Length: 402
Image 1 (cartoon, one colour):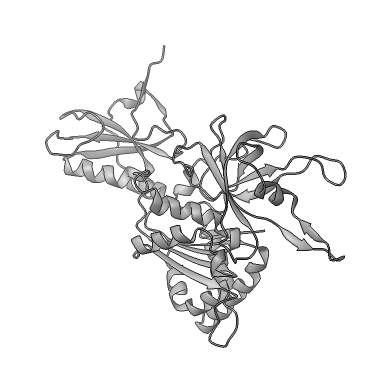
Image 2: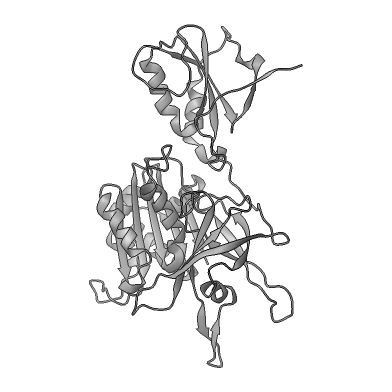
């Protein structure tokens, strides 16, 4: 009978999906003050399963202890390693090129949960909270909703979306179809227990050709949802807006209105959950350019400004308040106005290989922002269309508009 040995890993929470590597190490000395999570032998071979996010840290520790890494093998998540594969081999050699490639392409190996729950069998959660985000005097209504996931297996990553199926039937008598909403919480949820998901929902309201006020079916349902009520959820879906694993990346976020939702998840993971995420300690630059009509419409204003004050070297917050601010020529200030204003800095950052640009909000925001990037690139002798296509190819240009 074939015997197996489970190799210890550093992460045990199955919700934190991550690629793992098996380090085969020789010559480690037990002397020193490093507090490692695995037994150390002075002779023979030591096998250590290391998550991608701790590879550099463990390599440095092993070097300090006088060890030599003779082989690194991708293993997946909590992999069971056959005992035969744990034998030392004189032909084993370190493959630094393979290791570098694995480190430079973390997104390729990340397991992204998709469609864990589908429309024909949705997850039924309960509403835990539903509160207003627009201050008095602002425009419209935007609600922050949190749903309980503890009775199922719905888990997700920052940048994904979930579907909500409103109750009742449509004008043709058929069950209502799902509507997608960007997730506004980190994978740990607002309660940091991995058992909730949160949304940022604006009630859709407009007038038809007859002058009648029309309210969105699903947004109205959610905005008026009572705490304790059941809600049918599908998903998660989406890989376009995922946050890169690189802790030193530059993350430029262009948002309008409820397009702040995925960026709230990003920023909470970067700054509000630092103690919760020992394997993700953001050290790069996050720059949010947030477009809203009035100051009262700055969603999550207190949290955003607190993070900006606490992490001035890592988080830059820029508002574009269209009904209150003016450009130099007297026009209204939109997100594209800020892109033009800070074009020198933005183009310098964009040309760095680890800079990601994200855009989220109403569909109408994309054309003027694209036009602005094109015009500013032309001023600098650059071709924006070519730059954008290259960034897209390198998975550094991310757009989600609706």
